[in-house]
Length: 222
Image 1 (spheres, rainbow, N blue to C red):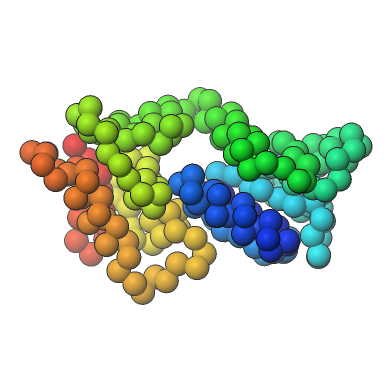
Image 2 (tube, rainbow, N blue to C red; image 1 turned 180 degrees about the horizontal axis):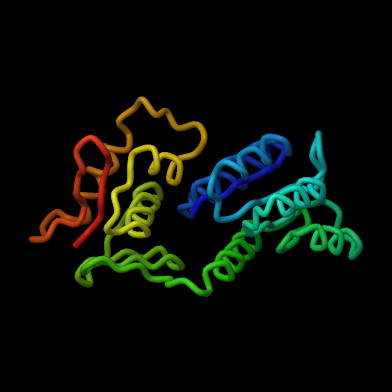
């Protein structure tokens, strides 16, 4: 899951980003609305976390612009303003939920999970390819009933491969969905993580699920 965080307070942004990455989310963090709008238009996010008070445009304006551009990504608004009028204004602008600062990270995480579940209510929460299973809610991964312990980045990479099972995914596609905006496309980090996954997912099994497609990328298939 990839999340866009638009928050100008450095300490709060760092706190949220660190916590989300520990929960296996990929996070792009920007400090102003213009950058946030641009990234929301060019990248496929699963959720946007938007601060109400920003230096260039406030969150209400950004939220309205996103919705006017038919960007319907679930949006959680953060603010120090907690009056009923403020909450109503945020929801009327197109926000899906509203959280008042200060907040406990556990509550933020619970609200994020609720929004993502709502978004995926018509989708399968358990992805399956051959004898490999991945639960998108619990983040549990099993092959032939054996639980696999993955790092956050390994999980994100496997989830993307499974969402596109049977299709070739290029290194560019992987970098855009699994890594953030700071990714260096000239490194071999994707190949390194593919090897990490192979060692955990395929080693010891007769059928190999992760396949290289020469000159293009990778494919997950049974």
